[in-house]
Image (tube, rainbow, N blue to C red; front, side):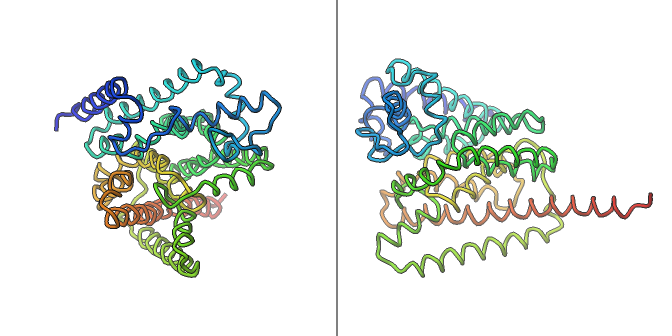
Length: 383
């Protein structure tokens, strides 16, 4: 494989996409790609625009619906209102420039990944319907993705905490990426990161319940992932929640069992390197959000960070897992196959949760075990 071919194909695809958006229009182009278009353009970022406008009129956007943009209140932390004011997002020209810069930043990260770790699997993920959905919506998860990427690139330097804390302040769920300090055996900054993240959550303590309630109101089993999304399926089909509880128990027990098996394998050493740091950041966010929230599929973009490690042969069946990532990120395309396509997508999402969670768990245990042994030896050493 020519090393630069995936990057060239990515840039070429984006140029063609831009041309079609210009010539055929927003709705027709995205619909042709199986991505449901919303108007006005960059609909998700319009939530910040509408919230900023409401705030200017003295209305709390976290308790008041954002009609006509959304039937629900804003489910983002209040820091976004301040950002909207600083960037003057209610002004349409400012809004479009900001959205363009967000997309360019995300594309820039994609280009960097393809340049450093070229593979067609990574290319497929960057052009998946989940990724395209996030771009079409102008979703602020693209901003968070870039910040988490900056956090990984900055490791192991102490200032890596700056982009991570900013990401946590913007959307909260990047707190799971703190696992990168644990698996990287950076224990001092790990403690500082946990303390700093706790301060952020304390500052948001009055907003958390409202954010979660609004997020669950808009949840759905379609083009989403997470245990709450699975619960929606059982509710919509009027199935007993006992079945849902049994399914969660099976998934959890399988994950714990596999974690212990991997932990006991002496050959599974704690990896190092940038691809491993990228993997931990992406996998920890996927596993953490799978447990706690219902997430639209554009949040699967964090699985992109896992692909370089999986395709490098660092773990057994890594390439197979990369295929599961591609399947999981293309529900909008595969659902056209009916029940079979939807089943393949959800089996992939659940399978990724089990395997990625098991690897993260085993490496975290190995890191803690190593630190415990080092501390024990230090205490036992003669003085």
